Amino acid sequence: MTPGWRWVALAGLAALVAAAVLLLPGPAAAPIALVALLVTALLVRAADPAAPAPAPEPSPAPDAPPGAGPPPDATPLLAPLPCGILLLDDDLTVLAANDALARIVEHPLETMLDVSLIRAIREIELVEFARERLHGSREAHLTNGVEARLSSAPIDLPLPAGHATQLIAVEDVTALRAAQRARSDLVANLAHELRTPLAGARAIAETFQTAAGDPAERERFLRLLGEEIERMSRLVERMLLLAQLESGDEPIELELLSPEELLGGAAARVAPVAAQRKIRVDIEEATGRLVAGNRDHVGEVLANLLDNALRHSPDDSRIALAALAGSGEVRFEVRDEGSGILPSERERVFERFYTGDDSRGTGGGAGLGLAITRQLVHRLGGRIWVADRTPGATVCFTLALARDPESPSHGVGETDSGA
Image 1 (cartoon, rainbow, N blue to C red):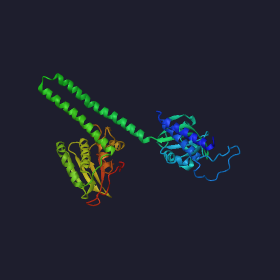
Image 2 (cartoon, rainbow, N blue to C red):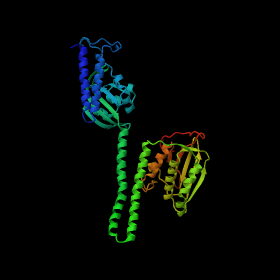
Image 3 (cartoon, helix red, strand yellow):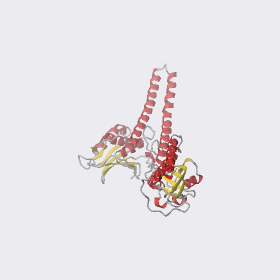
Image 4 (cartoon, rainbow, N blue to C red):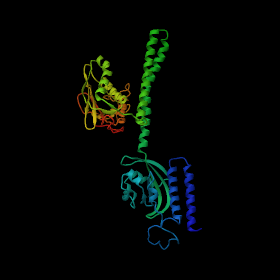
């Protein structure tokens, strides 16, 4: 068998291995298949007589087999791969790597080649994984905070820099693991919040059976049961709204809005509740410039913040509203005279289900109101934060100024909360 046909036969065998491995279960199947496909490509390239001639190389060693050419270069094949790839020799010297790996470990690609793995990567968990030479995968925490899935497979591949005997694939799974934790926390928190109204509804239903002969008692228990069911319904609806906002699937139509009208409408809605506790809701200042927003969403934001301020305001106090024009945006403020928010909680109050002692969460005590408020503001392209003011608490959010009557000045997007 001529050398060319020998390469073709080996390439065909590698391709069959890749196809078979892809049918195997387990996380290690994909990296192993990747190795087989890589070997296939290199072997086919070596066997192709029409391939472009490489740059002149030093003459082969005297003991090299007759007709043997220079080893193929793996760099062009590794470069477009989305996951990080390392090709190592027996001494764990890095013979080849790709840009994806450089991004994950945050080291320049050129500094990682032709040096030992510990010098190239400086990641103890990754180096220990390579030393074990296991045929499988595991997860590791890199020093830059990245959560990575490491996969390893043995190879036998000559390269210009040496002979590669091990391939390691490094996949950044930080976002995936964060999403999994968030989903797990969401389910746990939702189950916890639903437990109380469900237990209350069950107790009311059981008591209702013993009071079946008393019409007044039946009416009272039916009313209490309805309140518990309504509480659960509100919780589920707010969770669905929060999930919808976080997904960003539904587009938001922007319109030109008057800050003065927005504040006036919000103050009028809470006026009856505020009057019962002798709380004044005053509009201190409202710019006449228009903002780009969505009337329903901005109304929901102001309603949440005012409800929060009312629940934490003492009787016979004051809530101040303001809309102040700045550089390209309007800053809305809702200020109360309550107990305030501790500096350590000023970011956490926007987390879902967070109900600390000084938290301003809403949603029937479930801690969803400010989480929804933050998502609404972010979807409108603004920021939201708790201002460093005392006494009381001041929550601020921004909306973009409209450039002219025809075109809003800011598109819909998301930004991090903060001043």
